[in-house]
Length: 136
Image 1 (cartoon, helix red, strand yellow):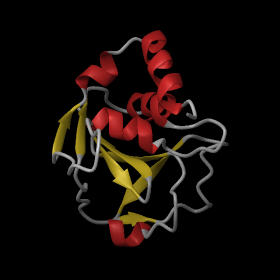
Image 2 (image 1 turned 90 degrees about the vertical axis):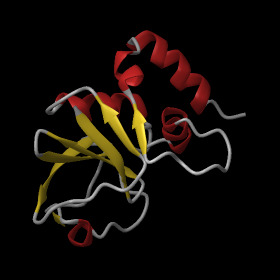
Image 3 (image 1 turned 120 degrees about the vertical axis):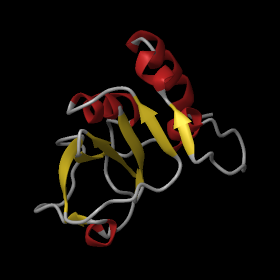
């Protein structure tokens, strides 16, 4: 089971003792402060939607943390397909809020069971995704 959280506006995935960054950070990211070796090149999620990070010390995921039942490299790959906006490489805050279950200004729960997200058929999620991302 992967554990998923946010890091500088991107998504941080921990699975099988490995860490992946999904999407572009939305601002400067202190990788060292978060426990990672900084990536050698700037993150460009439009070229590659996810990259593997190297932990240099124990890493604490900040709440909310999703429990996502996909392991290995399939987890960041699937999450990129589900939550990254292709035209800019950013993680959609609207989709993240939907997955976490936030509808207003309430605080996010510390832990979220996201088995439903992994089990949602791609065709169904595509309809949901298109409607959530549609500008109103």
